[in-house]
Amino acid sequence: MASLDQKDLAEEKRPSAVDETHESGSSSSGDIRTIQLHEAKEELQPVRKSETREKLGKASEDIRRTTSNVLAQVASRMTTRTWQEPPPPPDGGMEAWTQVAMGWLVIFTTWGWVNSFGSFQTYYTSVLPQSPSTISWIGSVQIWFCLIISVFVGRLLDAGLFLPTFLVGAVIQVLGMFLMSISTQYWSLMLTQGVLTGIGSGIFFTPSLALVATYFSKKRGLAVGLTTTGNSAGGMIYPVVVRQLLPTLGFAWTARVLAFINLACLSIVFAFMRPRLPPRKSGPIIDFAAFREAAYDNVAAGIFATSMANYFTFYYIASFGKEALGLSYSSASIMVILINGAGIIFRVIPPIIADRIGPINVMMPVTLAWAIVSFCWLAVDDVPGAYVFTCFYGIFAGSFQCLTATTIASITKRLDMIGTRIGMIFSINSFASLTGPPIGGAIQAANGGKFAGAQAWAAVMTTIGLACLVAARVNLVGWKLVARC
Image: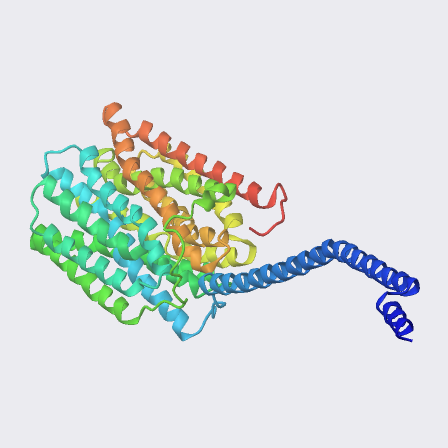
């Protein structure tokens, strides 16, 4: 029995073949599953990595898009805030026409004063030892400073600094006129009448004229034309004052009376003239992009060429009457009054037509007639003929000058760029006014004091200006005969 029990116990301790087979089968199947799981994991791992990369890529792309949109919105708001389109002009009303009246006083005290230099030219020639060509440099320098500064001060109007700019310019101009009254030599007259009054006038002239243009759209030509009649009025009144007071009060008090006239007029302007547009703080002083526009370049060239001839004629018309026709100083001064005053009505009529058909369309025939009249000066050999020529020259010169600012504004797309672009062309034009009268005087001197050569040169320069304006029209509308521009 004991042996059987021990045998049973031994059998129980010894695993059976079936158990061993089952256990071995279980372990092998477990190993297979483990291997399969590892293989599955290895196969899924690159898939999961690629999915993760795709998710990260989409997330980063979304972030980039969101950031780009935010930056675009911010940039758009900044750009809109900086370059916001200005509001449309009222094109009339009490405030707008008040600016026209104030602009009239500005032109009266600047270009009326400048254009009256012909009366001073004749007087200085009789009391100073310098030649007429040398004396004419005083008036040329005066106009040059009046215009060259335009490129800088035109931008000040756009920046919202009109009032301080006007105040500085008015003080300098009036101070120059008072100092002119104590000047007795050529160099002192050059510094006071030439430099100081020129700088002062230039500081406030261009911003004031551009300010008037910003108040009008359809009636801009009429408004600017009415404003420029101050040129003719001043060109008549200042020579009359000089002609009447110089023999009785003398040069010093005559100059002081003129200074008080300007002081009163400019005080009224400072009280009532106000800009309309919001300030444009950003933007260049010089808009170089304008010079890539062929029409702008041709308009600038046309104004430049005609100005050389115009200022020579205005400065030398009294000298022509005195030297070539034998008129007295008093009678020769009447020619200065006529050449300025004859165009006063015609500074209004062409702008009215320009508002309907376009300023360049009006400026071209005006310049053609101006060139024809200029050539007619060659045939003038008596006093009646001189008076007739003076009147017609003043008519067409005034008709042209009243359209210059309107023409520049018409080829300027943004209202808040008008001051800058007008200032640029006026600055270029300053070199024409600087060199025109001395060149004409030098031609006269080279011909033994005869005016024929200088007269022919002036007429040719006016014709060149006409050709430039024709080119500008072609740039704008091509060769169409009926087109507004």
